[in-house]
Image (cartoon, rainbow, N blue to C red; front, side):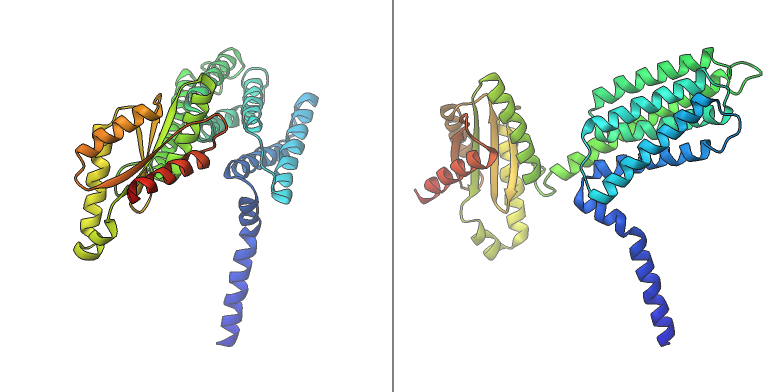
Length: 334
């Protein structure tokens, strides 16, 4: 029994060591860097296998050797030092792999590499769609598919006696585009869920801060006003204590729904935590924000206090929220 326990502990230790490097790299760097380096390792290993093929030209041997060295080197650097790769590394990787695919589809007689070039397109589409803006990835992927398709059409593998037929090329292009759209949809869905408050449907703290940061940059760049309001429900703890948390949840949903439905379409409501909310008011100065708050409070189903802060040139997200928060507590005391 003791021997079995020792063996079980050893097996658990081996399983932990097997993935320890991945956990360590993920903790020290970004998900983007880990995924990009793993994909580079994949391309590097493919290059190693290609080096053992007997019919490669000198150019193809140098291409495989160079690809292998660069890809594996970047992977080892990320794993060993936990560096965070810049965004241009992924773009360079996608473009470089596309150029290699165009070469093997249109200017080489390597059948296995031509097949691999088509098989890698969906992988690149999914990777690209997850980490880059949708408009950018659609344009780049369209260019890659057009160039790859043109190379295959005029290359040695098309035709009745060739490796590919028109159906194969069209099917590979459609499947790659489907993977691209699926990746864009999943990325949007995950971001939407991670930025939304489940109870009220408003932005959660993370989503609100990200949106505020973006609107602050836009306001400073264009020289337009922006205001932030912090709102806090009055005597909310008493509701939870006397009527229960279900009643408190109902009030949170009701009040936040009123704010979202009665405010302007450009205004953003976020739940910072508990019964504390905030509103982001683009293109709005302090006086306009106060008028909006007074109008919203006329229809309030539960009393709440508010404070306004207009964006200043030296403001950060934290500083503008802090000023609005202090103004809200002055209103609550009054």
